[in-house]
Image 1 (cartoon, rainbow, N blue to C red):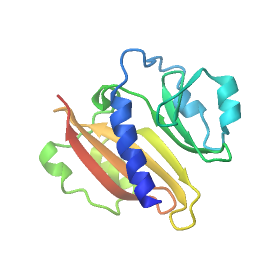
Image 2: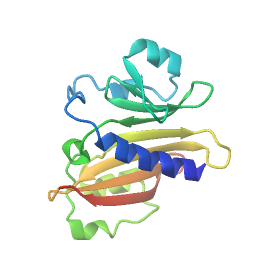
Image 3: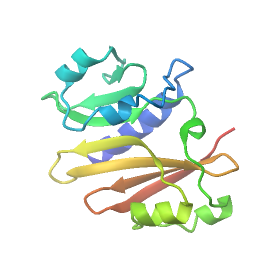
Image 4: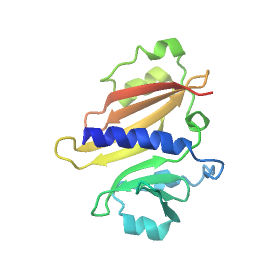
Length: 168
């Protein structure tokens, strides 16, 4: 299941970058926040315009990419975006200090250290017994447009891993 999670994260990171201006920018209607993790595919398909990707994921309203269990229950949702730096809040942290943040930090500790709440770009609800639990991926950027993504396990409320990428 960890391998699946890593593949899903990598795919969504690459796939979400491929979207263009078609991605909705109306902050008053945040479809990502509207889609609850208790949702089922049939309900979402009826409520929102959707397209199935070549890899079997469902894209709703060109804004939210979802993966489902065979039962139709939502497994993961991710924001569709062209460039994470365009949507990420600015963290008040210099680039050279980013490497000092380590696994085991809570969302609150990271938020305090960065001086801003991260934007959730992905939520994953794993039902596998070995890796069961909810994961969240939050994103920030520095003033130099360096994007930081952090994956948190909600059950432990701990930072599991993070990635830093310079956006040009």
